Image 1: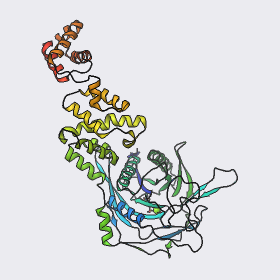
Image 2 (image 1 turned 30 degrees about the vertical axis):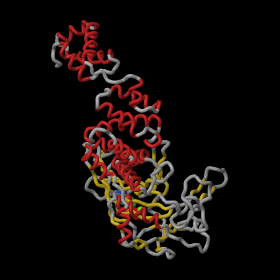
Image 3 (image 1 turned 90 degrees about the vertical axis):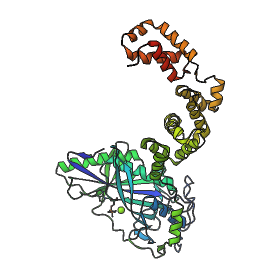
Image 4 (image 1 turned 90 degrees about the horizontal axis):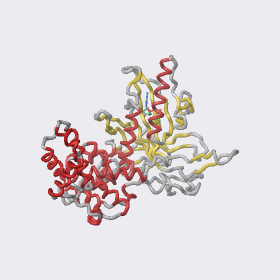
Amino acid sequence: MNESINGWEVVIGLEVHAQISTHSKLFSSSPTEFGADPNMNVSFYDAAMPGMLPVLNENAVNQAIKTGFGINGVVNKVSKFDRKNYFYPDLPSGYQISQLFHPIISDGYVDIDLLDGNKKRVNIERIHIEQDAGKSIHDLSPDCSYVDLNRAGVPLMEIVSKPDMRSSYEAMQYVKKLRMILKYVGSCDCNMERGNLRVDANISVRKPGEPFGNRVEIKNINSIKFLGQALDYEAQRQIIANENGERIVQETRLFDSNNGETRSMRSKEDAADYRYFPDPDLKPVVLSDARIAKLKNEMPELPDEKRERFTRDYGLSETDANLLIEEKSTADYFEKAVSVSKFSRLESAKLIANWITGELFAILNKEDKTIETAGIPIEYITELVDLILDETISGKIAKTVFATMTETGDSPSKIVKEQGLVQIQDEAVIEAAVNKVMQNNPSQVENYKNGKTQLFGFFVGQTMKELQNKGNPEKINKILKEKLGVSEA
Ligand code: ADP
Ligand code: MG
């Protein structure tokens, strides 16, 4: 994190490549499925055989439009495809089809959360659609390279931010937010390990108020943690260079996650001229109002709207709402759990949220599962919370019930019944326990009566223990206060 180091301000803009969720490629009907054997998903078009023509995948276009709505962008009714010419062994046509001059989406933004609780708007310049390249494989043989064209022509969205971020933290928050939005929209699965979301990070430093400095582009970062590390390293490097009076050259660098450093890949000052020109095989993409309206209509509730609704309708804190909305499946799980509770949503929501973000998340983390794969029925969470709310069990016992429930798969009410965990409400029984504790601890009673009132917690604990954790806490408190004679400090 580097808000400002030695009076230097860090300036960051990100280009995010997101693989569009589609069944087939951008301009051919080859499948996009992951994990196929090399070169199995390759049509004549993908291999750039002479005379093959592109056919635009309209679903990919629709997904990009929805993403545009997701980032509050302007959907351009006319966009166009251009050829970006360069040679690379995994690019058989010798050019990549992209949208340089007329992208499908312009001028969006997302709001990110900062550490101090404030929000910050990061502006997005554009989203354009383009083809992915194939993969060169250099480490299978000592004396030759291989090419796998399965990925060639897979549809991507490139989401280009303005240079609005001022720290690695903001950059990480931005990618997290973008990822959440894309997953809600359903336009990208955002699996970073598979490379379905990759980040090129542009970074420069300047003294506040001065013009932007020369930027360095760090290519192809595939984890949010690495993004933070790469930016921190690079900010430091540029600041030190500046302070030593060296000039920062505009260049492309790579991040090496083994040593946490970036190193130079190529200088941009003698950058290739890509000779962009309009692709003569593809018509402009012209969108009708009806099509745009239909897609707008299909938009799901977005994370910001959901958070707002969760705090408003369920009385949750922003922190709780944030934890719940991070994955849509968690948010759905929560809402369903609240809806089947026999208590009103204002009574049950907070507690259900706590159990999901506390005990349930802990289990998911420990067992590396998701809410879908953990297989804990929604009704069980509701049942557990209802048992607490109607005072059948204490919160403490509920933790034991939860643990047993996840181990055995039994429902909370069955566990409570079978193990005799019902909360003790009978004041005579609680009083007997209190008496016993006082008898067994005469010196503590003496000390308490002489003013050492912090011992109250000790008595509560001992009484609870005596009642095998089943005592009603309010009643224990009440009876202890009566018996000990002195009011709690
Ligand atoms: P290019 O045309 O070379 O790709 P762009 O102007 O499109 O350059 O910018 C690419 C990315 O670099 C954008 O995300 C932008 O926000 C970011 N960027 C531009 N200038 C700077 C700078 N001086 N410092 C940091 N990031 C920058
Ligand atoms: Mg660019």
